[in-house]
Length: 254
Image 1: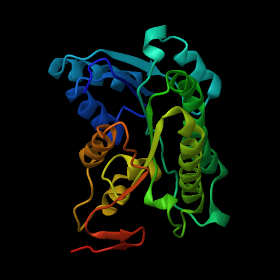
Image 2 (image 1 turned 60 degrees about the vertical axis):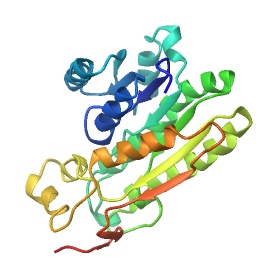
Image 3 (image 1 turned 135 degrees about the horizontal axis):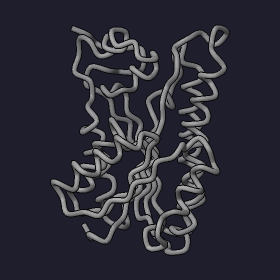
Image 4 (image 1 turned 120 degrees about the vertical axis):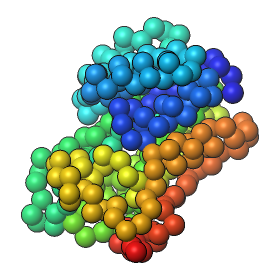
């Protein structure tokens, strides 16, 4: 891979985003790592630079806020705005409730992060890809964007929206040779459930009991596979689950 390539990864402070940063750094790709937790970003930059000779820029901002996102983007030097790979990874679930019992604050958090977050950063990055007629956008979706499960209506709705955005981006970018891919994981053991259950560690742990879940590295490997295909090949959509998972509600636990 050309070492002049640049990737912007949202939600890089943990989980899939963090693993993807390592995977791309290993290939000599310069990184723009984004997230709200500045201290974690700084630690990650130090860790990666100790292992790989790549350039890294950090942008700490709230991707839910369009103005905050734009202000952070505008701090980048012009040459760093020529992004080759945009990994829209930032996302979350908040709560697991029947719709009629749901917390509107949770709904807004999911809608603003999972949908508006992709829009806020993509609209800044895409014009450069259009102008150069090259680039690759990967949106991290979910099996929840392929189906719906009880007590997850709003989260599933946001991931269905990611599915639609991915397909729409593919159409919009088609004349410019820009690739767009949706990667839709099932159960990956990250901070996802801890965030969903607002820090309740025991409840979060139960989600992954009795089977081998996916790891963030599994998804990072998949991301690199997609990015490393020849120029004429675009993988549009991948659904990836643990072997023990058939869908959102059917998991074989020992």
